[in-house]
Image (tube, rainbow over all chains, first blue to last red; front, side, top):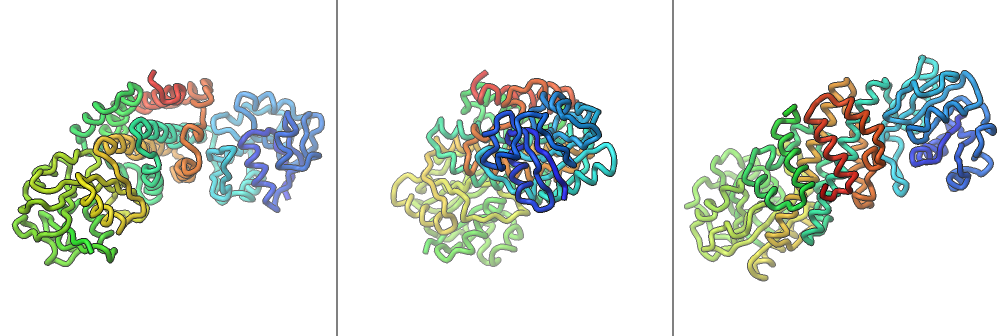
Length: 253
Length: 253
């Protein structure tokens, strides 16, 4: 049984608390939140602390706070030689205070407050300074997920950049699609099966193989007609640049 | 029972043939293909014709060929006052030869040769010149899909442009994500659950609500770090423009 502490009360912290609470292989001893009421719907009140001096010693401290606060929070932990990890996709393992053993426990998923997720399929990317610590992280991660990976800080940077493309930017394209629909009184609903299928396709095809559409076909009659049709300069600009990128097969211009 | 003819042998034509073949409410009388062998895996050889003079009269002729060939093909149909439709998202109903009654039968989905699709959830966008013809198209569409919509040529243009954003461009972002992973020896597999979740989210949230990430948070430390990390000029350019667009909430710059 791994006894652990969660520090933070944001989206990722809350999803981790839910997932660990459902596992019999780990125990959440305490969670730290600046405001107690942020976590009372998830944990017994006596487990929620608001002062670092109330922290108990456990096997693992998981810091899940905004990236720029990780370093400072790691200094606040009043212990030495404990295993302390953060959950950030972009932050190096080295920002953690070196009085403790360092690691990373990065669940690669997009978490929304209002949507539950199936943690068992969420990839968790782990990093530690030595094998013994890695084993603790691996046991902890496997208690909630079937997709656990050893990923260095350098690889994690690449993953996070790639995640911005496939998640943040993709979602923004959905938004632009919705705006184009609404501007012309077309229900965005009509596009939802297409959006699902686009994501489903790459389970079996690689994205380059799955690419279709006027840009891919170099069908300039259609791409020109689309550019004439789009009135918004921002949409037009994005249309041009992504069309070019498809036609160059994602290569440098 | 609606008796119909498919003209064309590409992806869309083949998926339509498969879907109609499975329906007891319509009958494919003939299909036209320039090369007979393109369709012999789907239809009895005697139903496949390679010469327009062999066309029989049916209730509905569905032209599913490349956009720039629709007009010419519609002229080749050796009948008058028949219902003739095309399946294009971008082409006006008016390109069809006016010796016949005109319509549009546009299944809004991305079709790949090597992937079967569940036609029942594919939206089919219909347009006709009169109610009687619309009814024929509606009966035909409902024989294979539960999502049938009346969409004017003008609305269809908007839908197609929006579809390019949410499908073609999204898929290209997947490709860029994969390239970033491969460049840094990270398995692209790790990102696949995130891609699924990104698409799943908008079943319940609208895209603007679902938006997360450093651009949305105006976290310039992270976006600057990402831009430093990306070496490819094309990727860098796309990163900048989509980050700006998220920060302007998709509005004109």
